[in-house]
Image (cartoon, rainbow, N blue to C red; front, side):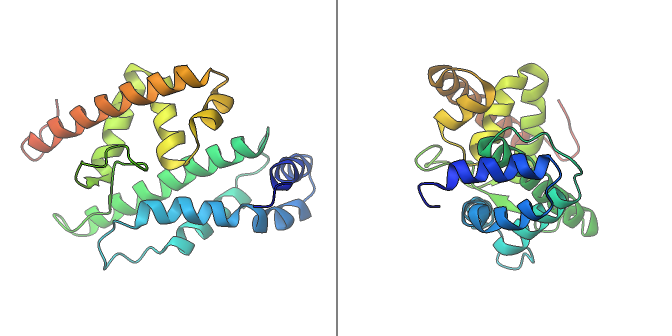
Length: 198
């Protein structure tokens, strides 16, 4: 991304929001590398026989954005936050469909880590992560949103604070508490017998 790209991305998003269909075509080259890095982060720990590739995940998100209808884009960070949500939905859908095709079959795995966060933790099943994140959302929606933006969206603390209109310190505390809560929740789920729900 060039140093002028953030402003250009926001301008193109606003043009797209206002009905300029060509703006999306000009937007894609500016955001593609970042979306590709996000996608690669999540599929890097998949089983080698998984059919979903980094570019395929980005293209699926792109198609969903095209068919989403009019979105009230605010800025580039809002765009990456929406893309993060779509990426999460694609990965969860794939994992669930693969699980339903073959009971006990291999599922999509990602590491519950970002840079040094959770560096010592083993890969976690994305379905368990999704279940834990849904449980967290019922208790504390803001912390769940922070995790979604940071983990699936790859947003920095400052970018997450901008999206949620909170201070970076608040986001850091939410992120830290949410990681601990999710780790415990996923550990509890992994110890439950098959089919058991707490």
